[in-house]
Image (tube, rainbow, N blue to C red; front, side):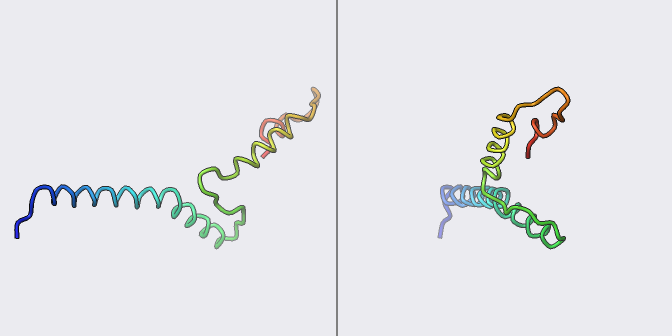
Length: 84
């Protein structure tokens, strides 16, 4: 049985693609979920991990709400700059 160069290249390409796919899944989903589980075990609670966008919708809502309120010279500016 002969092993052709094409089958070797195809096997190597498949191995590389599988490795990249596993790293991507680990980076995007498994790593953050593992970190979330470890933090919960230590007693830190928070919102669960959401894929890619996270709390972006809530943060933008809070920022728009903070910008809609007027501010005077003597007010603290931190809640307006970083409402979340």
